[in-house]
Amino acid sequence: MNRNMGFSVTTLGTASAIPFPARFPTAHLLNADERFYLIDCGEGTQLQLRRYKIKFQRIQHLFISHLHGDHVFGLPGLLSTLSMMGRKMDLQVYAPRDLQKNLVQVLYQYVPNMTFRVEFHPLNTESEEMILDDGKIQVWSFPLAHRIPACGFLFKEIQKPRNVRKECLELYNIPLKAIPSIKAGCDFVTEDGTCIPNERMTVLPAPSRSYAFCSDTAYTESYLSRISGVDLLYHEATFLSSDASMALKTFHSTAADAARMALKSGAKKLIIGHYSSRYPDISVLEEEARSIFPETYAAKDGDCFEIS
Amino acid sequence: MNRNMGFSVTTLGTASAIPFPARFPTAHLLNADERFYLIDCGEGTQLQLRRYKIKFQRIQHLFISHLHGDHVFGLPGLLSTLSMMGRKMDLQVYAPRDLQKNLVQVLYQYVPNMTFRVEFHPLNTESEEMILDDGKIQVWSFPLAHRIPACGFLFKEIQKPRNVRKECLELYNIPLKAIPSIKAGCDFVTEDGTCIPNERMTVLPAPSRSYAFCSDTAYTESYLSRISGVDLLYHEATFLSSDASMALKTFHSTAADAARMALKSGAKKLIIGHYSSRYPDISVLEEEARSIFPETYAAKDGDCFEIS
Image 1: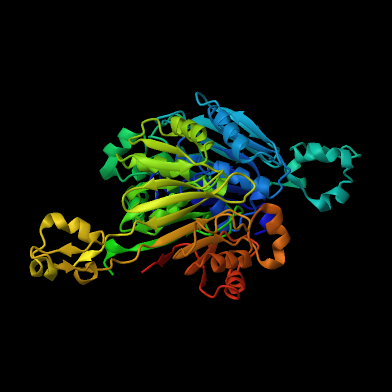
Image 2: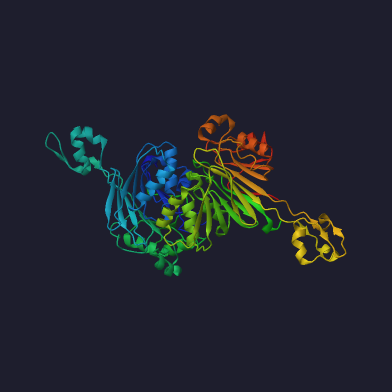
């Protein structure tokens, strides 16, 4: 595959709050045609980015789901390193409002001569919102059901226009100015008045791809319509169903919950993570989810999930 | 060796500020007879403690050399995890004064129901000071020569008293109340007036062991007398001598500087660390130091240096 046409998610950390050997806390990197979007930034995220040879100066947008340490504590280190490496490009940070004052103080004390600007975008943790449209990707945030305000995120490629067949340009003598409307789906009328149907001149572009990130959250169907038909769904699966009472108490999900969400939303593939340290072997979580939604993968640190 | 009589240093992180794969930022754990002292707490320290199966609830004292992120950013995560695991024991933190307000704010926001108390001890970054005597170990801080106020630390076992030979107790009919003075080195006069010289009744205890931590710092002899004759010296070696101009500019040391310090202080063994990411192969730093001080070891993450 052309590397510049990829759409992949690297799971940099798959632990929950209590660390477990060989599992870092949550951070995901979405690479959409070499545009990098970082989602959550648990302690050690910059070390994982290094380890997996990800050029992290390319990250333009950073999304923080909620203000629990295992999703945030890697942020000062990452920003500090980006500055030491001389970054110039602004960084867009989307996070619950309270992060800002905390971040400002830490950066003031530890990164006094910051080389780049952090632009802060407070999340609406009460209702769904489109928070970014960069011409290639649209991003929505939507409330999750956790102990503190938390958001999930949907990343969706903007549908590309139809491709005009090159041989048709000469065949029908199509002028340059007519191309945008043909790409948009219109028919074309030649000089002698013949109407050429659009489908004869164009081919469908690759379908737009999508990724939804849902962590940390109890099972809730409140955002089901937003993620409907998503290509790749990440849903936390902190516990097994046999520990459902723990999930209920802490506003987390079981592997079965994650699978039900994948099934109901019509997701094509499910990845799970945010495993409690009580499960040294995560295959039990994968098995539980697969019994409901077979296309489930229990992510490990460093796994890369490609959407073709 | 009896595990409870050990004196060892585990180097949890050996990187400098810019992360490098498989090298975490600075943190050392001193285990002195199963008393745990943590020195510096770079990002990911709690992950390393987990990885090397160190029971980190045992840490009673935590020392922060200076307020650069690569020596501090692991602190919120560690404290947060200790609390989640239900720690009750107070934690003593020795650090430059400015850490306190930053820490208080972070903990207030991220660890609202902390289960234990952090007792903060501001360091004197201007002059040498004994900062702890817990009956087993004495700890001194001393100023280093860095871009911001920074302290090194000397850990020294308190000399144990002489051991009284069991067979002498009966032989000379020594009463219990006389034992402390004999252990302290005094002679003993028997009931019939005979003076028994101390060396006939006692054996020397194991010599007290010591560890000095010197990072981050330019080469300076200002604390040479404090660490004189130390058993194990850790001295940063960020650069090779061929990059001495970088060391000078950033107030760091070369491997040769570290070796000279070991030589002049009469240290028995030197470990180096805090390597710049420009050296993927640290053996070049070890070789440079060994040409001056042969008993040098380039620490890797997870190495454990035992003082017998």
